[in-house]
Amino acid sequence: MTDELEARLDAIRSRLDTQIEAARAARDAVAADAEELRSVESTSRSANGECEVTADADGVVLRVQLASRLSDIRALENLLVETIAKAQRSARDAASQKAARLLGDTSFPGAHLRAAHRTGA
Image (cartoon, rainbow, N blue to C red; front, side, top):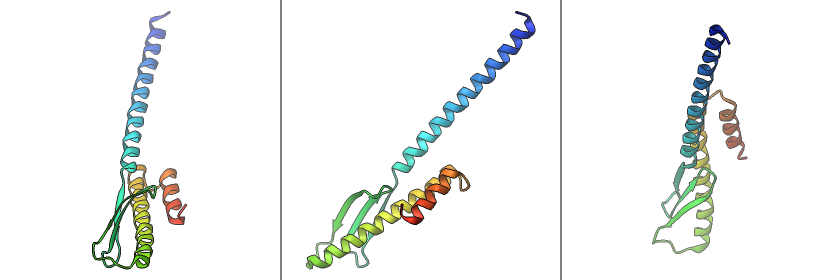
């Protein structure tokens, strides 16, 4: 092999090494962003503070707290359903906003997440 060919191969190897390292760094950044999105939670309270619900971005209810002054079970059922829905929407919206910041407002994934959250999908 000539020295010139060897120099070209070394340059190609160097560029590949640089690209591999950049891809690894991008993968690690995406993993960190995904973990940040998974950690989004939102807490909502009923209008008069009778109950408080915390949900995550997937809509999973994490906590429900009830005020000790409650006495009407039927009213409590309605309050819980309304407050749970409010917490779920709030967590989805928070995750969507965070995704837009992490992925970029004009990126396809960011736009797709925002559209899905607007339609409730």
